[in-house]
Image (cartoon, rainbow, N blue to C red; front, side):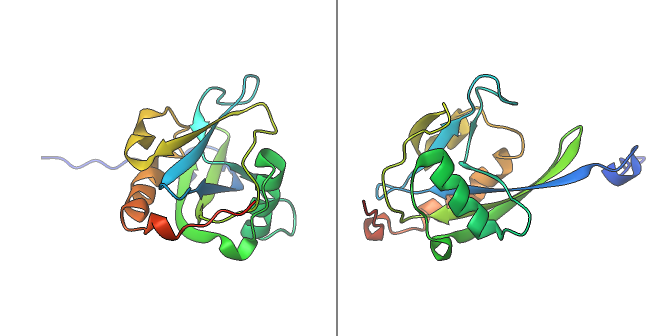
Length: 159
């Protein structure tokens, strides 16, 4: 039997720019995760994702995520409350996305959509039922494992 190997992406055409974005799995006391649906007019509109966004020059991932959560959801997240959970590395046609996912179990305020997106609290077992961008899909198993081993009763959300 012959074995064939695909060319590494770096050898196929021009190199892609690296895009670093950060995302949060907000976990409520019942162990549900907050998903946001990308609004019409945005790339990948209609797909569900973990809230977050791009880093600005000089920002740490934690500071960027705290800023993005304030902008997108009108909540306050302390950078030290963000727990590294997993990361995604995905090649899109025009860029390569690197996305760390942080778990967040405590924040100030109630999440409210600030950018026209729909929000939904989803049980971990149902995450795969929501259509997501290809970069988000590999994050689901790590998140589901973390949810299965978490003590949800100890979560606290302040207002």
